Length: 198
Image (cartoon, rainbow, N blue to C red):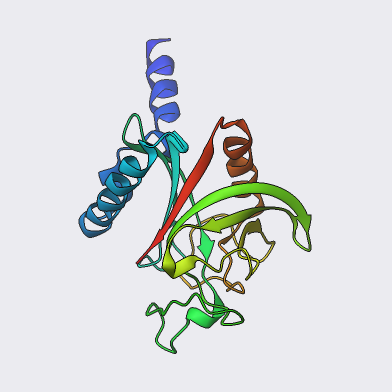
């Protein structure tokens, strides 16, 4: 009976959940340092009381698109609590895989870097989506460009060894991951910030 119990505990412990893993285990050192810099910046902005001081979203465009690079971050406990794949804009492609360019220009189909406030939802061509209000010069045209957080079936759920589909500039995620983000956004008493960086 003891052997069965030990075997059961070992098998259960193998189902590790990334949402409870230390940040250092999710990211390599350079990615972690880059994230940490942006977390500190968001924390200082959140002290104004205008945005959530509990949760923020971080998108590291330096990480290849086939790997998890959209992070849900617990600002109070300093840890990543969820992560998923996210597409970059097709206009951000340079012809060299992994090297991206960014723009705030209308019709560029580029991803725009900077801080965003996640706004209200609406029903669009991809289903439910959340408006994104660009808070920096680098993304100030987000609303007029219709840059929104949405899901799309072409974005896989699991990490891939290849690059994933591109968007028209929107942070586009898998539907299952979107549902988790949706719950977080809609249960927040204040607007959640999203930081897209490179």
